[in-house]
Image (spheres, rainbow, N blue to C red):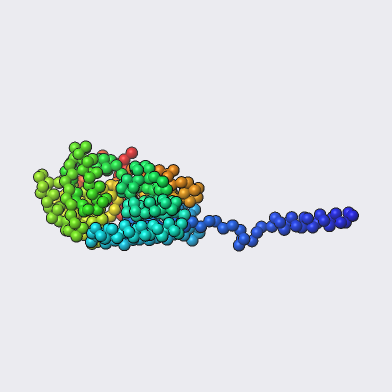
Length: 355
């Protein structure tokens, strides 16, 4: 009897030992794979910066391609220069077609880069209950959001929006004697809004903005000459967030910079995009704003946070960069009170930081 009990105990012990043996790696549960769709209109350098910031923020949150993330990115083509009414209608239809395809695919999340992709895809994705995160949007209200902080159901993201009064205040610190500003824009939605915001804030600060609208195929030079000789003439040119300045290998921006040097009129840009000839850059950085969207996306993917619970994020304060080589070409010396705040930045630029 004792032998039988001992044998049973040995069998039980043997079975228990096998029961607690580690499972083979191939049978262990694999981490979930997240599927993200990316939608944007046109393929421009700032959008790539925003996308790179988004992907890097996901990587910091342990979500990365090749490990647990699969990304499908669609770039809707649009001829910015020759895009008339019907071309724009076609883009809207293409965005909605892509949104319907995405809704049927049911990814874990959609990243919309830019205002058009956000504005025209959100309704379809909301109906399909697919979370939408946007970035590189100049003003969330123009993308269908209720306010600068509230996106509405199923949507969150990050914006390039900066307070125009704050931006012009920084410009005035650097160029305290420049009170008459010239701005040239096209029918670009962001450009029109940017100029209107600058004109409104300038009036409140005792400054003045004179503007001219051109077609995307027009040379910028005639408008520059008209603004320069108008009345007492502008003391500074400001570049709005307008695709016009990136066309033809930055032809308009280069002509503007050359005109500024020849006439000793500084050029500032109110968007953190490459503008050959600008002496001062003030605005939100696409890469940083993209990273903010990535942080929101990580909360949705990892913690199942509802998008509408998350506020729209934006850069705390605008980045301010100065091109010292351009200042030298203009024979401009910055005030000591400004130079006290400079640090060396990339590409030979100075960054100005005020508390």
